[in-house]
Amino acid sequence: MLERFAKHCGSSRQLQVTFALQDSNDWKTVVLPGPFAILGRGDDSSIPLTNPLVSRRHVYLQVIDDQVFFADLGSRAGLKRDGRRVSSGVMTRDDSLEVGPYRLRAEAIPNSAVDAPGDAEFPPDIPDLALDFVNHRNTTKPLKLTRRVTLIGSARPCNVRLEHESVSRVHCSIVRGDRGWWLVDLGSRTGTRLDGVRVSFAPLSLGAEVKVGSFRMLLRDAITLDDSDDTSILTDPASEAEAAQHALRRAAAATPQATQAVPQDLVVELFREFTALHERTVVQLQQSFRELLTLAIARRPGLPLPDDRREPPSPDVPRSAALIETTSEMDAVEATGEISVEVHELLAERIQSIASDVQRERNDLAVRLLRQVPQKG
Image (cartoon, rainbow, N blue to C red; front, top):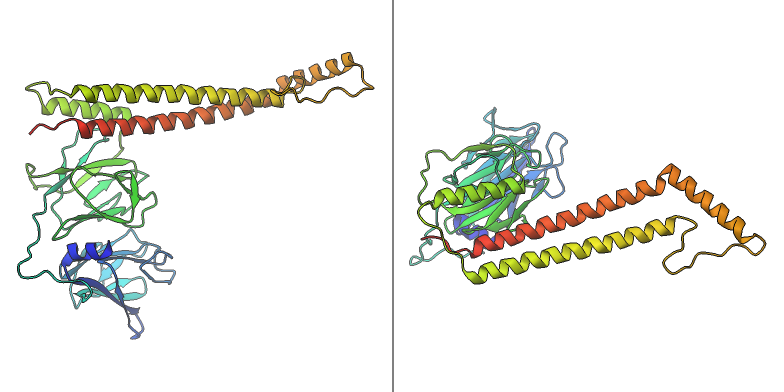
């Protein structure tokens, strides 16, 4: 996959990083196998820079053709070039960045292990893509991606700002290579998901869904969009119900001329799926209540267990005395409410778990429906 990513980002180019402490001429050179790198103090860093002045995720480097793009990942000390603080840019061969106490140089060098395209080989036509936010509270038009590297996160220097606690300062990037689009997670806290799967980097295609924190975005064809503005700032994502209402309103506005027919077999399949979902939910609730009833009976002395395995009264105690003692214990337990609180907490936990499962299945069904509905040409 790295080799494929490298080809898409610059054919026979790979990333070479040279670094040294500012007061030292002991330069170290590392050639990385892929076209991108995340440098910092963290153990998962492409090149660990262990000085405490370096943040865990400090700088992102990305090869594009014969150049290297860089971006500050929200570090404490920041990045400096020629003594001036910078947040992102493109490095030339003579450039060096200050990363904490380190000086750093990066360049795209030929990679003999990756075959360069022949004279008769031409890059394929790369479709223009746009991000369509499907769960935002306000109506937003799709955002056309016009940059070679688009940064997505909650703070500068991100081109797409998603101001929410679930989004890291610089969360991920979308890279337009010569042969395709790629998604790169930049060590975010909550991860970056492509069609529901968490990825570190992956190729993109039309119709795919990208999830960044709580925001969901579909990749659309941007051929009809203008590129006058490729920067956007969004705040709170909508709930699933709000997102569904927004999608219905947008679909209705997009097709005012005529009602679009939906295949009968699709409607039947959808009905069966939701019926099965309802039945599974009822079964899960019944099972949970049975378990809770068993727990309540087991915790209350004086009531028989399901298998009637309660120990009988000792032979030297009259049965009537044992019954009176058991009843008084039950009254004490009911008075304190300890069992009631425990059962209520467990019940709430089970219901929340079932509700989450149902919501996830309902969302999956909705996605399947949207993908199967024929699109108007």
